[in-house]
Length: 616
Image 1 (cartoon, one colour):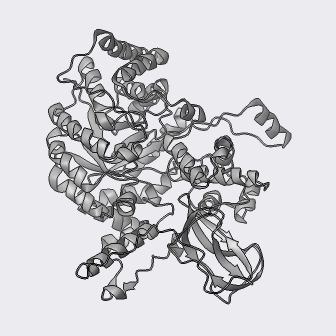
Image 2 (cartoon, rainbow, N blue to C red; image 1 turned 90 degrees about the vertical axis):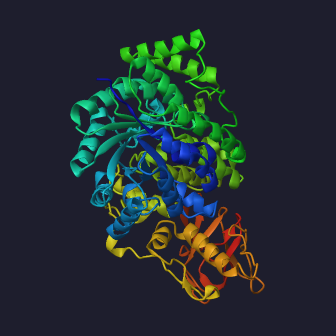
């Protein structure tokens, strides 16, 4: 009997998120859905990740509508998949079971078939509730083990650690570590296990050993997920197939390669040569790709690669003999576990078709491509691009100090942003960790779960004020306020459970989105237009400023104001929370006194050095 490989298509979620900043509109997605219905992929990842946030923030669209509209067209032809962060769902905070329950129920009722559940710390307790509720409501629980690597320490770093009496961690992320996590997830009730390599850092030889181990020791199907950024992607997917993967993740041609997953068209050629069936309609895939060509042109301003691969159809175009031979060489090398030959052949194939070459900077830095581009964008916003090298250099130290979390959302963002903060601290002549985000504090404290290696109690004390690990207490969770909108006849900001869930998971973004659509709905008859949500304000004084001013250390958005006029404050007391670099940063007053004026409002975007609070 011919072996069949299942394909999970990532184009409409991870593909567009990796390459086009998650800017596909519903209208663009609608253009390809009839072809997807005919293509018959095993699964289509269409939701989760950055999609719900981005469609509200940038497109003014309803995330629930997106899921439901896709389901209405695709039906049962493919299982719809979403990505969630376990107890964190889509946000940066742990949520109680009541929120997780409501989210899973509504997602499955809206058409979701598979929930891919991961935790950035690989803390299995953090995926427990989502697995429970996904299965309870009839969904498939796909538990992902996040692949990551051990830090490399220079000889100088090892000597310095010994001199300080500190022991650097030995190898943590072994094959046995990943297998142990997978078996724990299987015991929880996982219906499948994904080896999730969000950074593209897993080389083919490691894939071969892990895949064989998982197939021998686990009884559920194994999926393999990776990215092409550092140059391992295509070779690693082929290695996964040769060594027994049940499912692999791919994108369609014009949305594939580079920061995204490998193209399904090349996997189709490999499988044809291997005698493996795919059970997808490549004619329909070709029609999807034809439309993606024009959609990619429409997304040009968000295109991180800026270079289209050569036009190619595996159904109609013949391979040049030398490239056809490279496919055979790659298969032979994968079978022999000859990593160098496999990568050479795959790089030759990708170069022939015009896919991006390996990103050597990301490969050397050993961080996710998205994490790197986030840091570049953040430093440009701060007008501090010159400290990029220093921030990159600090990532391993910050990661180790925080307990060696995997570099995947949200911990990649938390660690990356903190490395930027530390680099800025050093640039300004301050000690490292002079400025820490609330999320970094919570990570070190233990609120995100158990880190792969324990955090040094002295460091925890320095950052959080407590020595002992302190898990998140869900009993203290407070639901987001849901005010009435007087200008809209007193309707609630969130009028139903799905809108309430958006407000819980994306407090700032959903608040703006829901207020905007409600006000636009109310103002349609008058022709008024709501003011832009991203207008930069800040520093509006009601009276002449004569006292001392607390300023914004970086550009950001006012998340919460903690004081009011007339309040007494001490030096070092937090006066507001600034959302910057996707992190919440508590801003303290450097001086004592009385609050004379609060110069900003919640939701305002402010530039760096903007006056925030006047203290007299």
